[in-house]
Image 1 (spheres, rainbow, N blue to C red):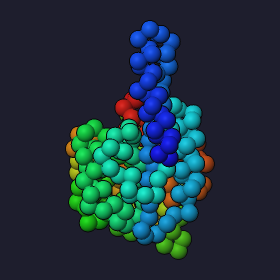
Image 2: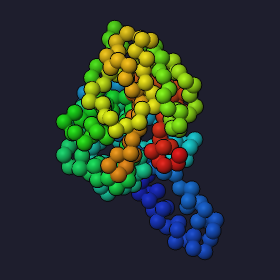
Image 3: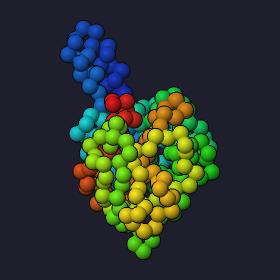
Image 4: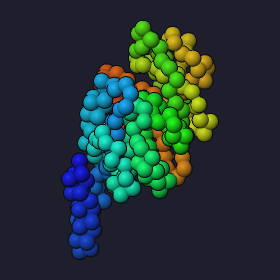
Length: 252
């Protein structure tokens, strides 16, 4: 991954120099794809869908002008390295995945205008890091069991965001539905689970399952979907992910 980043950075620094005399090169330089870091480290439960999720983000990147690079290492969380990326996605991370130094580097990244996107178990991560809890917007509490994956109805409460503008008023899909604790009041909710449509919900009528916020200098988006492999084959869920990414990249 580091070789790819170095190559892209070399292009970014050399092209503008040549572009002084060549408008065509300048135009090409402006089209350089943005880099997205996909972080998949786990210290707790490891979702089998991680590989499918990474593949999906790479496909979305190839189709939409960004490059998704995966890492399992917290050592990539340095100020210098994170500055290469427009967005960092926590894809089904679990438990304590960054040490204190790495946490400070990520905080600096967000405070400098970087973006964060959490998918599913990103809310089951870093319980002892209060800043992260505020960034993600809520922590995992529980989920239904026997079976843990169920069909449910989602109420689309905000269609003005690119992650939801393609959806109807209700969205019926199958996934593992998290219940949350310490939900932030600072986020803007996009999707709300209808607990009457399935068994195992504990948040009541206020059960957000996707939200976003401007946070501490950067942008943060979270979706509770993405437990199953099948999620990443659903056109509407893929568009939901893409919309979240494009908002984080400030394209929309």
